[in-house]
Length: 171
Image (cartoon, rainbow, N blue to C red; front, top):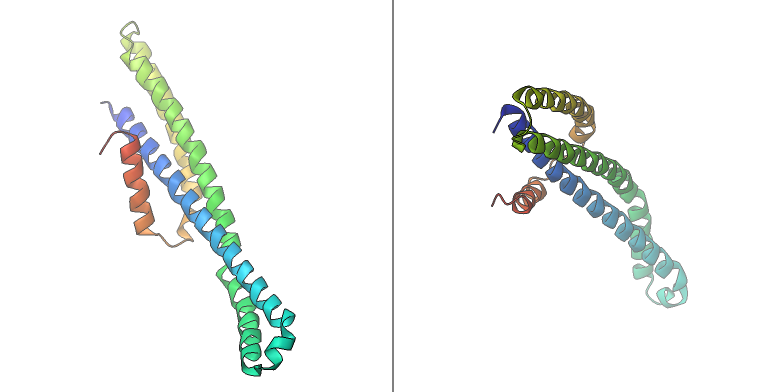
């Protein structure tokens, strides 16, 4: 395997892993955001809607009112919705990069495997693919700042890594 093939293969696998990783985290944060909103709605409605019932047990009504107010204040501080949007954006960018790497991989391996292509043509194609690879890496560097703002979930990342290995026949 040539150096550019190694670079491209690893980049493809990394992009596929990050596509799954950011997609999973985005879905998880979106789900948390929905559940907290439903919780707030249910607690708020239950508190107001059942005043007649709660009048008999004022401590429960006060506790639910307090819980509703506290949850309404605290949940936005978690910024699940904002995190989910950022993670979805990262997942989309990694997905596009994975597709670009797959295309470059196919282009390069097809050219190198074709015995009718001259050595000069193969070298020229490898240089062209390397230039495109370099441009894609510039995009990754730009994305790194957004990624650094979110704590790494090692368990999810490892799971995504294992899935990419399975999907590519590496495990």
